[in-house]
Amino acid sequence: MTVRVGMVAAGIAAALAMTIAIQPATAAVAQTFRLQLDARPPVGEPWSFLRFFPRTLKVHQGDTVNAAWDGVGTPHTATLVPSDNANAWRATNQGPGGPQDPSLFPWALQVPDVTVGGDDNQIDVDPAVAGPSDPTCGTSGNPCTFDGTGVVSSGLQFSTPGSEPHFWTNVTAPVGTYTFLCLLHPGMQASLKVVAGGTSIPTPAAVNAKVKHQVHVARTSDGSVADDLAQTVKRTPVGGNTRVTIWAGGFWNQVSADEYPDHTIRVHVGDRVRVLGNFEIHTATFRKSAAATVPFITTQCEVPGPDTPANSPADCAAPTDFQIAFNSKALRPTAKATLTSPSAFRNSGLLVWGTSHTFVAQRPGTYRFVCLVHGPQMSGIIRVAG
Image (cartoon, rainbow, N blue to C red; front, top):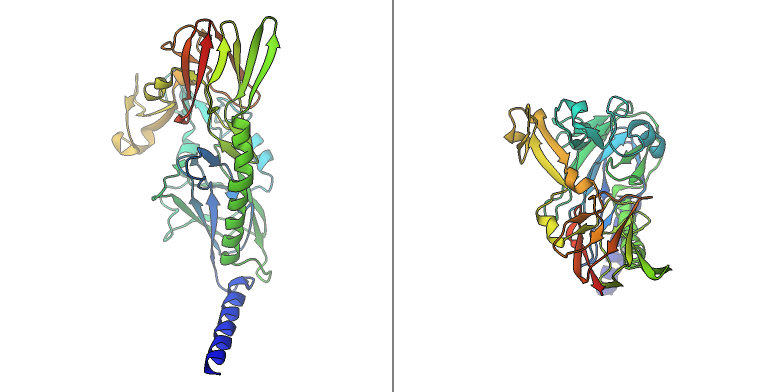
């Protein structure tokens, strides 16, 4: 009997604990909710999850959101904007893509150096995107405040397993719907719904459980589809030759498989290899070793004349002189697109959705190519036969 009573008591305690865990939250006590950026792929898979988890988060005024990175190297921003329409906000504030005038599009990703105080013929990451909206806040002990009128942003942060970034925001905005988004990745966004104080909302524990489920689906379902798309090789007869078409990576439901086909692509002299752009940025660059000598971005201090290399704002005379610049050699296609020597540098330039680049196989050999954005993990082999 004693054992049975103990078992019943334990069961009641467990049930009460579960009830407490799933009891909807009210506004009586301010709470902290975790909003996850990205996720860990299965071991050995070079995937990035260009998503916020969960897709929708409900809070009360006074609650805090902990934007927590959880990827394996892909950079993101956690940017909270006063709009319930992420795509419309992007169109108005970031523009159509490509280099933009920040006086017209204040949150554009790419801006000409001369529009942000520089004197070089180069394209920079907009300082507004690269840096935090307010460098004095954003920690757990001193969160930034979002009042629903302005933009609050973490700045560009890289996912780093074992030392992931966090960005805390205290929400004081009026009841309404707002948006968390990543300024780097279109489509990476989540709704933030601020509800009235008497309205019940899921608890932080319930939100965490939902995140776990959404991540599981993304890893086991969406990631697998993206991976299959990355492995797709299509052959089309054109005249007496063949056009081989591949994707620059695979993309499905905001999951990017940052990889080229695992198996060697075999073609003959005279064949063409067309690489299609995707919703994540990539390049197709020969030779593979170019990943070590042609960086996609460079960091530097803005000074009159040629800029000086730098690793962080601390290396510059003033922190605001620090720049992240796109390497024009990586961004632009080479004049030649012929595969004539495995050691020759050939580059597609930046590949995005709706673009493509075609290489022509002219001489036999084994040609290894790489994405300058994602490095050696995203590489492939083309073998040209005579």
